[in-house]
Image (cartoon, rainbow, N blue to C red; front, top):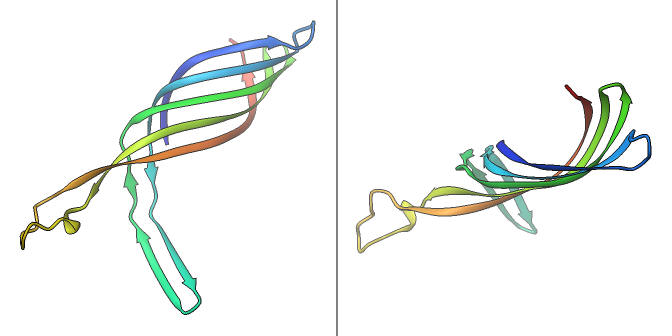
Length: 132
């Protein structure tokens, strides 16, 4: 995924020395998604099926992210952070359905159908922060 997001952060100090704080973020922007090729094999009793799906580059689409976390000021401008949140998007894809369309003995040159792939990610991260 490639995302370009912007938004706001709310900081709520949790003690008087302001060493520990709760952070809440809301971000929105655009996202491009690449789905890699995958294959699967299914066996049910005496029947077997194998399918392969090609890699896809999905188009740019609206994306949003909401998360909350804790910030602990460790030393001067250095802090430790931990976040948990959710990222969501409905990426579009143009599926070629030419082989499925038939007009009285004539196959059209190319027919596409727009399909939305809802992508969602639960994010859990930790890191180090330096304030300039």
